[in-house]
Amino acid sequence: MGRRLFMSALLGCAVLVGTVSAGAAPARAGEPLVFAAASLKNVLDDIIKAYAETGGGKVVASYAGSSVLARQIEAGAKADIFISADTDWMDYLAKRGLIDGQSRSDLLGNRLVLIAPADSKVAITIGRNFPLRAALGDGRLAIADPESVPAGKYARAALTSLGVWGDVVDHTASAENVRVALAYVARGETPLGIVYETDAKQEPKVRIVGYFPEDTHLPIIYPAALTKGATPEAARFLEFLHGDKAKAAFLKAGFTALSQGAQQ
Image (tube, rainbow, N blue to C red):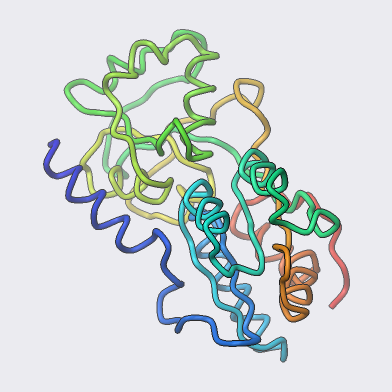
């Protein structure tokens, strides 16, 4: 099991971390480059396509864990827009003067869920001291890295609040980002995992076992902002993300839209 998880992690990192969306070429001069949390990939790819179809021009996206993207921006990566899966990594860049503070807003919300492979028969009710460790059996709990990745930090907070983190901390499969954690469960490499509701709904090979109470962790908020020196084209795309067409796509994918839409 350990070797399979290690190899899967390598594969997941190669696909998601620091790469542009599938089929996209690297951004050229004048083409906005968006650094976005891995959990946004499917819906943001669709929105980028819709933006181009309405005459907005080409936008390129790179998806990974928010921590990885923020550190890449800190190291000089020429991203124009950053969309984080929590406020901490946006704050991290703000404190270093690397984002345009006036452009920052809370774009989306999400929910945290416990998942299992689609054919799994496991049944468990999430609550105080719930038997998560017993449900794992000889397997592990797939979560994003709880030290740095937002989905993992939310998961650790929820399990700590419910009194079960100590039971499972030594029985986790830590992933580079939430999509890799999702893949562990989808491939049957772990019996359970914790991801965002939107990730679970986009993967037919998993099912949602239960929802974590929202008061067990900080609100799941996706802030978005322009980086310092972002292009005018990037500002136009960020405006599009706040518009009604993008909002409809986000809602369809299961996100909560936190910003007011604008007619487009």
